[in-house]
Image (cartoon, rainbow, N blue to C red):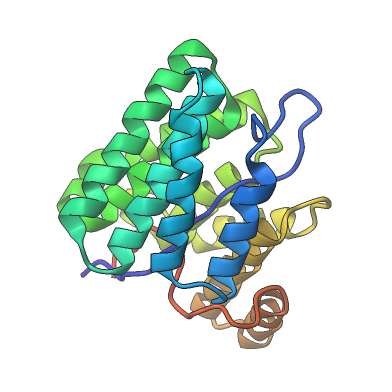
Length: 242
């Protein structure tokens, strides 16, 4: 059974070579995401507000930055439908996110564009089941690697890989030990947005629990929830063979 856990994993540290996020929507976008993660607005209100951002983008001339943000909005909408057990709508939005991001990448290849592609792939796999995961998991990993090739500082892409390591069966390439090492390295980074730091600590807590390192797991859990004290349990995108 695929263990259902969910939510957005978005942006990371600033690279000296690439801006992590293009365009002018970053502040508005993250204010909404932070409010959602901290349970200050519900999914219905998040969907309404991202719809306003989407309408603004659709009124502007198409560009790779424009397509990037439209793809991210579709990714969030897909996650909202997933949270509400509306699988068909979720998968349709996630596939739309990938289609839009593919058009963006065709104009300009950007690290975080590949990271979004990878996250959409991961959430599609979770909903389509374990057999589909086995056949398609390399796609999500290749997309995360493409992101890191363009920007090694894209911690969210590294987090996708760490989540695979800590949750995939050993026979499929999983290694909780290696995943913990990567997560601990990520936790030492500076200049991360709250969302990224939160999910790194939360994922590390889950991985340490699997290794029965309970005191360390609790410390990581407390660090995560000091960022979003009202976060609802069970909201992180990952591949889980349980």
